Amino acid sequence: MDRTITQSDLEFDARHIWHPYGTTPSQYELFAVESASGVRLLLSDGREVIDGMSSWWSMVHGYNHPVMNQAIKDQVDSMSHVMFGGLTHKPAIELSRRLVALTPEPIKTVFFADSGSVAIEVAIKMAMQYWQCKGEIHKNKLLTFKGGYFGDTTGGMAVCDPDNGMHHLFTGILPEHHFVPRPGCGFYEILEDHHIETFRSELESLSLQVAAVIIEPIVQGAGGMHFYSPDFLKKVRALCDEHEVLLIHDEIATGFGRTGKMFACEHAGVIPDIMCVGKALTGGYMTLSAVMCTEEVSKTICASGPIMHGPTFMANPLACAAGVASMDILSTGEWVSQVANIEKKLWDGLSPCNDLETVDNVRVLGAIGVVELKEPVIMSEIQPRFPEQGVWVRPFGKLVYVMPPYIISDKDLDTLCKAIGKVVESIR
Image 1 (spheres, rainbow, N blue to C red):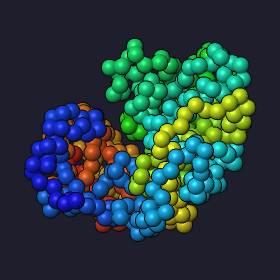
Image 2 (cartoon, helix red, strand yellow; image 1 turned 90 degrees about the vertical axis):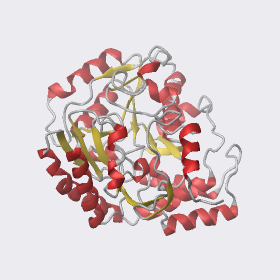
Image 3 (cartoon, helix red, strand yellow; image 1 turned 30 degrees about the horizontal axis):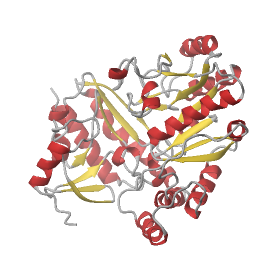
Image 4 (cartoon, helix red, strand yellow; image 1 turned 180 degrees about the horizontal axis):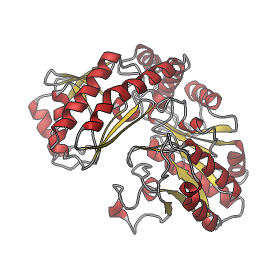
């Protein structure tokens, strides 16, 4: 297949192909990518841009990584896919072995799914079925924070922010769950009793009907890039235990080093009952997610029967092989110093944006940098300005944010931060 992208191709795309959160015909200019290597995307117009997004958190090792590439090539020569119903294969076993070893001790079982959104669906089903198996049929609701984002499938949409999220059009159609204000205690702030009081009182009053608290630990991602206190997370775990409610952690965006810890929950030293991972699970090479749970949860469920969920491409061998290769790269531990360096460079490079009139605040955690504006961006105006500066950044709402691949160099980080500063400064 000729990989050259023509103007005719772009016109066809804009007219016939849906893009994430977009329309047909497309309302925004599309930037065609012909190849990618390291941290760079080569656009069809000849420009080369530094990817500040890791393709939405996932390409932590960069593009065309030799270890990742070889793992895919080796696996495709053996088999690219085989059904997981009644069969198994080495890549799934090896990836599961690594995940069980990597996660906290009580987490023992792995359910593979297609994507992060599907992982959330499975996690919710696990929590509901757990209480059904214990005879607690009235525990069929979820409790979560406002400002959250859990994907675009039905179960995930139902626990996304009901007021300011992107799924308000489906209010009245989706299952109804319970929400409390997002944590008011920032990552570096001291937790006080009033910060947790609303959550405490709501959980106490609703505990007989709540099957699980479902949250993004430490970092609320697409709902606003909000960082909150590890001590808050500790209190949530303690209160869930006190009121006999399961705790689900969505680590899809934060897992595998993004916040400076292998999993964000490690900042608080807490262990969820159910944990969802995805995105960087395969180093961004293939779509794959996993739902992991404690042995207590899995034994309770399986004593009464199976989880009635089985995606066609469950534990796809190619994806699992990519996952094993990604885990092997992470096992070297190099990511720890890489992420620490990114954090320092993002603080240094983005902090000057605090002096700009249009900026509300700048915040950084691990390999995540956020410039929050006072007003929402106009995407059709701001998006083209980033490639003009030699970088790829995809803002949303009031947020201009980055989460670069871990392998990014200091020079490229400086370029990325300066480009953000110039673009933000141009906003009037």
